[in-house]
Image (cartoon, rainbow, N blue to C red; front, side):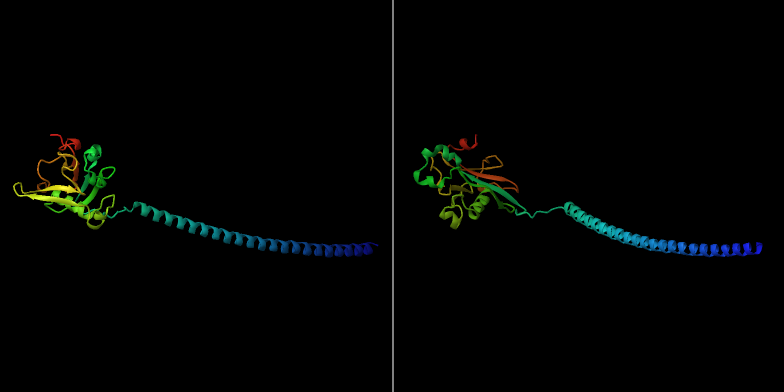
Length: 234
C-alpha cells in the first residue's frame, strides 16, 4: 500500500509540475509580447512627438528670424536719415509784388486799370529767385516778372511773364520802375507809384543800387500816398 501510495503521489506531483510549467510559460510570454508592443508604440509616439516638436521649433525659429529681419529693416529705415532734394538754388531770395493799397483807394484808380488789380492785391508772393554775386533788388524783380505769371493768368502774362517797365536815370545811375502789371505811377492818385523794401525796411537808395543777399525778402509794393499806406514812414 505504501508503494501504491508513493506511486500515486509521484504521479500527482508530475501532473502538478506539468501544469505549472504550462502556466508559467504561457503567461510570461503573453505579458512580454504585450510589453514589447507597448514599448514599440510608446517609442513611435515619442518619435512623432519629437518630430512635431522639432517642426514647431523650426517654424517658430523661422518666424522669429523673419520678424527680427523685418524689425532690423524697419529700424534701419527709421535710422537712415531722409534727405529731401532741395528745389531752391544755393543762393536765392524771395520776391513779393503787391498792390493791395489800391483796393482801399479804388475810387482813385483809373477805370482802365481796374482789371489788372487782383481782389487781394497780390501779384506774386514769396517766389524764389536765384541770385549771383552783385545782384540788386532791381535785378531780382526783373527775374521774378520774367519767370512768373500773375494769379489772374492774363493773356500777356502767359506769353511774356508779368509786364514791367522801367527807365534809367543817369544823374543817379539807377533804374526807376514806372509800372508793373500795367499799373503805373500816378494811376491811383498823384502820390501813387512803386516802392520796394528788403526784410521789412525801405532803403533810401534806388533798387538798382541795393545789393541783395541770399535769403533776403524783397517786396515791391504799390503806394497811393508816398509810402505811408504801406509802412514807409519817414
